[in-house]
Each structure stands twice: as C-alpha cells, then as structure tokens.
Image (cartoon, rainbow, N blue to C red; front, side, top):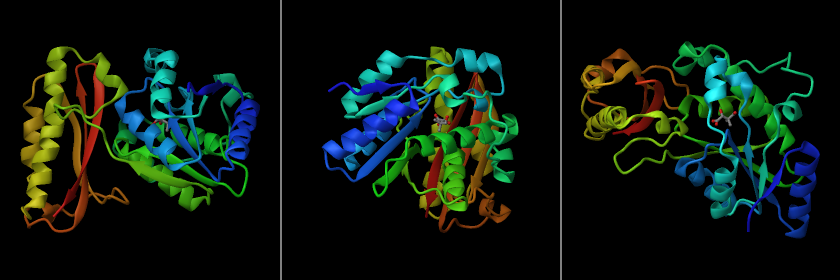
Length: 294
Ligand code: PAF
C-alpha cells in the first residue's frame, strides 16, 4: 500500500498515533532522510518497517546543514520516486514538511553544537554542517516521537559514520528517549558506496571513484591478516587515481573517531578500528568508510 504523505506536524502525529492504536502497536521506527532515495536508504526503510509496528520516513532537505546555497539548490528533489521506493519497503507514513513547517520562526537561534568532533573530518571542510544536521535531527526526533509508552527507534546509515557517532553522542549526552539503530553501508556491485551524489559523476569519474573502496578493502585485508596498516600505501593508491583528489584517509577509533596511535603503521594490527576516507571526484565530494577487525 502506498504510504500516506503528510506535510504538517499535526497530521503526522495524528496519523502515527492512529496507526499505532489501530494495530495495537507498541513501536515506531523512523528513517531520517533528505530524499533522493537509493538502495542505501531502502536498507534503512526496510529495517524500520520490518522491526516496528509503525514506520515513518522523513524527507526534508535541511537548509541549516548546507554551507553553500548552490549546493542546497542543486540537491536533488525526487518526492514521487522516493514515495514509490518507500512503498516497496513497506513504510507506512512519509513526513515531507516545508521549510516553514520545520522552522516557522525562521532559522532557529538556539542550536545543538557538535563540539570538537564536529570540526574534524567532514566538519573541517563544511563548517557548521554538523551543528545544522544535529539541530534538525534533534527537532525532528521530537516531532516524530510516538506517544508513550511506545518504543522509539531511529535508523541511521553507517555511510555517514561521523554523523552517526555524533547522533549517538547527542542522544546519550542529552537523554533523548530513542534507540539509534545503525545500518551497514550498501555498495554497488563495483564497490562504490551508494550516495545521492553519485548521479553527478561522469562515467570516467565513476571509474576513478572506485579507488576509494579499493583502498578501504586493501586496509581491511591487512587488518584481518594482523598486518601493520599501510596507510601511506592506501593514500598513494587514491592520489594516483584519475579525477580523484584525496581530502583525508584516517584510521580512527570506531566510537570516538579519535585517530589511532601512529604505531598502527608499523606494528601488527589487533582489535577494531574504522577507516574514514573523503575525496573530491570531479565536481562531487564523496565519503566512504570500512570497519577494520583483526
Ligand atoms: O543523513 C542525512 O540525510 C541528513 O543529514 C539527515 C540525518 C536526514 C538530517 O538532515
């Protein structure tokens, strides 16, 4: 059945409460998105619809998290196709509010700050991005919350590893009554992590972009075999690929995103880590990551 699309907070709350009551349900699963949905989002939507009595997807291109007005204007808006994909995934409700509905008094004057972790990696090249993302996530987590005592879960992709860690920290640090459920990255057969931005790559740039997952797999195999992490080798691999300009490749602690000690480049790898990578490929900025386990 096609999901019901609602655009106001009042309609969303009434529709979600109505479905929970009708199904005698006790859980609500939420999938936060900015639309332009692909199979990566479908994994989130299927997880939410499959594990909860009622599922809601939000589609809102949040101006607060774009530093650049051109990037905001250029962000693809594909509501009809998004609703069709969510229908396939079994989602019940789509919340697609306008900017005025979310920010009726204009841009909020009080915001969430991501702190020091929000300034590293993606935050270094996109100042204010994570403050804007966390502010809308905080707001919408409140707006979409089911009536007590229902269980509330929100599904976030591991592709945006830094965002996921920050949302988990916000929820823990500020006592939000919601469980954050991480969902693994979905890759195309050629290894490219799915992203709404991939559609802007030319065929040559697309081929160049494949070096990112190749470099991650290279480090993943070394970690699995207890070898020292050849971070320089992985960086060099990316730097030599056509159309690709490496921004960063770093191996970090998966929970805090603190960089691993320098000696991981020399001593056999033990334990768990996460490798983060970001690069400009032609006009598009791409990010990817992979867990490392020995
Ligand atoms: O990951 C995204 O698509 C966005 O950052 C989110 C979480 C929907 C907030 O706008």
